[in-house]
Length: 242
Image (tube, rainbow, N blue to C red):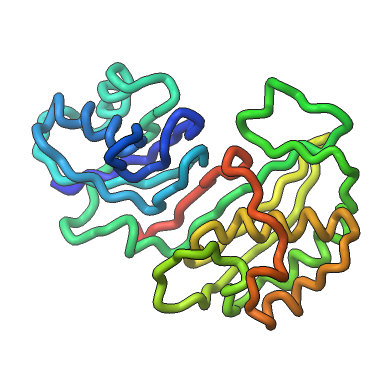
């Protein structure tokens, strides 16, 4: 049976989704719990979230045989998982289904706390920016990211991808009091792409002389904004053909 989980987690205490030799990952913790019930398993996730990045809609599959009703599996697994990792849903999918390669769209949200002073109650889930940001400038610039482009300027060094072309279906900027949220939906993302786009929009909101369209066209990482801290990024949702 190929089982698909919907997973939420606070990434603060983990080195990211993927197993690492010298640090604790979300994947390692989840697989340890799964092995209590199913023996050795290998999980596949839609997104290899980085250290400190959070998730509300991560999708994870694994193969196992079980007599536990899938409707009750989240409750069973959550009783053994730490409180910062939660299984929200479990369902059966076809044998060849792969949540990484079969994902149609992914949505990330980058949260910015734009205020005079920090708030410790939200510091784990947002990046603090004390300089007042111009929301309209950010919204205007965000529109340039939509469409199919070569996003080489928004890829961290060391990435081994064969192509830096990606399609962004939506890039929007919303505000709720002191919180500014940048939502980006795409067919896939380069290493640190969302965090670099967020950093570019922050610089534009600070009225720095950055031109989003020109940065995309020039394909030079040095022209884009800084990579924003991981703690502000959350994988919100994954659209799958199921």
